[in-house]
Length: 206
Image 1 (spheres, rainbow, N blue to C red):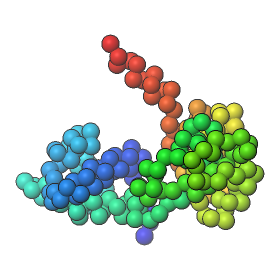
Image 2 (spheres, helix red, strand yellow; image 1 turned 180 degrees about the vertical axis):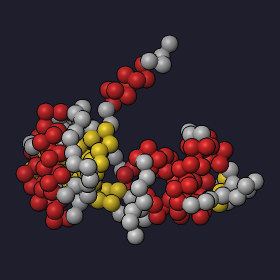
Image 3 (cartoon, rainbow, N blue to C red; image 1 turned 60 degrees about the vertical axis):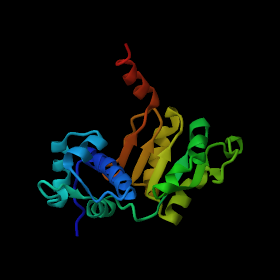
């Protein structure tokens, strides 16, 4: 069966809905209205309903959505039932902090290896993941069929490293570098620029 094509922004919102539904399910709440679910996810009810129509009709007028069944559907769509191994490239200050973060495992992701151009100088205190030379990265990705990578290298090295990741078979990159990466159409990049986010927030400070 061909994979359903969903806009990237809609996929992002599905993750928001999923986390809200998880909390509701943990609290043994059986149904939720579209208004309540949309408010908890920070979107408009019309947007929520539009996003869910990609998968068919959900909910009953006047009763809302069944939390357990909708959660099961989103679990299948987002493939959260499958463990997703991840590699990290760049073990400097930010990279080493990400390696020590234990929240990824709770969501079904685990950084199983990290690579750096100077592994001997990486900050590995309290880090359980070995830091390997970046020269071994492509072989490791191919050998373990890794599809996800976190990029935390300086901007000057980001594109070159990205080219190597793509060549090795990486299909999705979480990019913490300040560079807009050039990748082929089959590779997805999500950019996380902390400086831009802070700059954006300052606009709203009075």
